[in-house]
Length: 239
Image 1 (cartoon, helix red, strand yellow):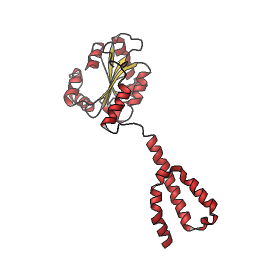
Image 2: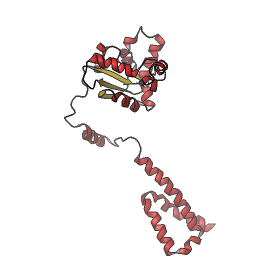
Image 3: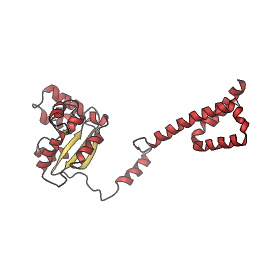
């Protein structure tokens, strides 16, 4: 027992360095067993191999997590500036939004936080051109001003819930254009059809393939906002 404790004490630093040794260690063990066959009879060696196997499995998992961690973020201000310059310094990019004959879509905070924003954008891009995209967070005043057109149309409780939803987290605003550069009125109406009825429950009955039917929860958390009137399309995009 004392020899096992002594072995564990001195082998811990070696095991801690396992992550750096990577996959070279199994070859070293193979060479050791080949040159000293009777080492397999030692209890210390068996314990060491069991610990090594456990650490190998955990190391593989950690490498996988680091390689497939879903998103990259700059690690310092200087690095961020260089990386932003790398992706967005191309002068051919120019101004993002078209600003005319377009309409606005907003993926609401609950959908962003639920991780379905990508699904929504994929569905939109199948039929339309997404010509500008911005992640933003609205305060109460800005959200109330944006939703002012619904005052008197929605009940007070529904209007308040709508404003609360838009201020509950980040939302993703994007400009939508007709692929064939048709009129603004046409793109507003066709995008509204893709979004579906305001109430997701109704959308799931009448328009089961619409965006609100797929990602909406209720009237205020219905997944996505879309411009109602053709004359408001360019105005909402510019806001």
